[in-house]
Length: 409
Image (cartoon, rainbow, N blue to C red; front, side, top):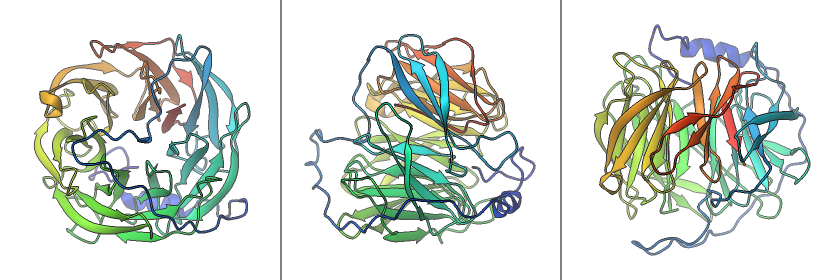
């Protein structure tokens, strides 16, 4: 979801509000989960690698097919009927459709817990919810239940690396929600916190705060929320016992930047921020001790003048390359990461092979990069050269109804 300036192809935020108000209410859910109250593990000592799970799956390259889950809009013309199910060949990248999980409305963003046993989806409604699904080997995901996010239009979620807390970003209401996760079942408890971004005031052509992403910092103690409407990244300290977010600092981007998506360098000392409105990428310093993010100078996307609505940025596990999806330009920008993560050097742009790449994702072994192309109804796959970062298309695009999120497992 975006908060575009006037005249953009996305339409006004008011149109999005009207669209969400028309969504059908009432999603049948399983019984709710109980509240979880437990302290998370202590953070690793500063300056030392953290051996615990980070939420990323370890590199692996099994033979045969692997699951691919697809998020979509179910209440929009051309959308799907639930979470799409597919497989991809780990040798060729070729995708084969296998079915759909019905009963999950507008699952526009998907994420798994660190153990890989549970799938979580936002339900991008005016009255937003998040849904948990059990992942069963050899069978389709099964719905465990849903919880209210307390806000409107949730568009992103993530699980704390410890697996005990789920964070979601409510785009339309500019707020971030926290839900406890049952460690045994993966089900969600009642919301423990809801933080609304009230300051600073909205940026140019924005009607209010618009939380677009929420994720845990590499220190595991801080949670960062990217707000497109206020041109700000908020840092909170997580209370691991109560599941509350305590304000720490705010990183201001230049007015009208429209920050959308943040990703961390493997060192944990730097992060890269995609700005969808002013068509830039910013390298940020990150202090693991305080959780403070310090934005640097804007960097070009290689897409020429105007805006190409950058969507998502990824960095390779070895920290050598970064890739940016450009929706308006229908391309992927390739950067070389230099200076231990402190610099991005623009290498080239590659046609994405579809229209409006809303989201991109690596396979767990990072041999493949998947692009969910919303407007063309397709998912494209690229082989990633680990030595050069070169992207090579892998076969024909896979047709899918309005894919806005691809999650390879």
